[in-house]
Length: 436
Image (cartoon, rainbow, N blue to C red):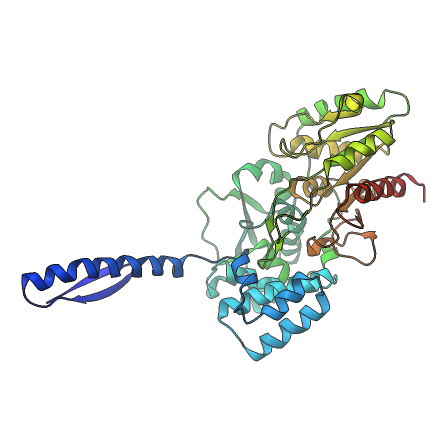
């Protein structure tokens, strides 16, 4: 006799021989085998996603050579290797889609546009028939509806690449474009999305049925946008009146003191991150990633008594200061909605030259940068504390340059040593306070 057993949508036929003793002896074996098989199926069916470090660092990865070059930030060589292997058609479809994402990252590090970001849509499992294409995008006659997802990427990516939705709506003003965001970001991004003429929903809301679905990073590739084109023409983030008022009070109390200057600080959290394509930052958890050592900020305050640090970090990333510097240290007012006081401070800094900003490359600091106008961005510097570990969005020639997706400065420390980090913080202050 036989029975049909279902595991994760697949039916398996298990045969039993006649006789009670034979059936009992097989029962444990079949059950054990079925549990193992079921576990294998679950592992196989689990979405691997675009932030797959296991894939990126796998020794048997068909794109291992390219990934190693990518890890070492040899962008041009890695680009060539990815292209070579993709032309050879090596690996599975998932391997190739992930390789295209990493190829796109290498091209972005060289400040090039890349259509390969569109592979993000495939990696997150959007069905082929629902994906955008060149034919769809050049069709200006027919009205269409598009859902733009923002899940699975960091806050920095969302705020920086939100301009893609504006670009899409500008190209197709009659299209119905809906943007889906995490619930806590809905109020923060509401004015931006509505200003672009799009609809905004939470990821916990019922997702609308649309003609097409894309991801904000996939859309970046579909539109073949240059990284510099993600800079909005005007400030895209605004804060509620309450946040503006309470932050204004803080700033005015500092600047009312003679010769004082406000330094907005984001030291960053000491935690690893997995980037799009699977590369980790840092890959070795013993290394510094994007966080600035708090001692560097402490020493900066001691050397510059006219500077008051406005700490905008998270509770676990704030800079501890000794009693001698207490009058040089403030913590920004607690937010009531996501990033409202940070955005308010950016709005104030945009029109006040006595406010400067130094930041590690992490989510809150990227929100702050995107809330600054162009003049404000020129008085903000992103610091790379470890010259061996940084995201491709921070790449540029030399040790100091302008970021590709904003007008903020980027400065690299010579090493992770505190004194070198202090030196680069002081260099940033000098550059931003010197009249050009």
